[in-house]
Length: 344
Ligand SMILES: [Cu+2]
Image (spheres, rainbow, N blue to C red):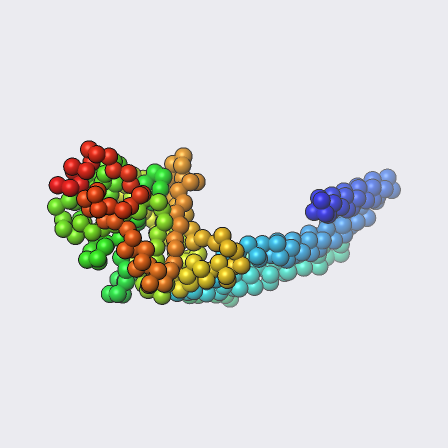
């Protein structure tokens, strides 16, 4: 309600100023004094510009105060810290430039309003000025791009040898997640083998490395805190995008092309619940690429836990291709007809 009243008041004040301006113009025209009329309009316009600038600045502070608590919590990955640093530098640099240019813009418009006694000064060209406003932004932009490239190359470079490898494949409209099992090797797969009933990723059943691979279709990914993880990213149909906002990372999932990125989670889910004072906090996997009518619902979650918790969870998972009699997984309901296939 108070917001409504504030907006209504601002509109009212603007209407009053406009009416006064109109009235003074009519009065001037009645006196047939065009010069006075022009000057009074200029005067009002100049003050309106100052008002516009002040209101704009108040608006910025107001929005900042409202939104600052809705920002993401501190980065949950080591690599994300570099991205946060980049954001901070960008905001500070562009913020300073924004403030200086806007103060000058409105100040000049106010100071040099038409009074009838001044005439404009024009200059068509100034080499020094051209040089200055071309090279300074170019250098600043180059530095920002260089920081960005360094961060990008870091997460897309070869992952450390001890990294956990996890595959994540997008499909309309959920994420399928595969863990390599005890052998730590993801087996081969082929899109021609894909079958929604019993082979959602098209695992090659002749590849022994597939025998212990674990597949989760619940969209929940388990990661170990302080241990690098390399994501092997793919898609079964259209382009999706693995968005990890809390880790400050994202990567396209492209059909027919494997993309990768690696990072090191640094805050467990349990710790993040405490940090954010939110017992319902969950790390989110969002699909960051418009991929069809169910795009909005393509949401996964991540659980970051200790090595012991992870090992315990992993031990409770059954291999996807394991004989159904031994399978404990409840995520995939296998029919009798598929038992024969999975057991062969
Ligand atoms: Cu999507």
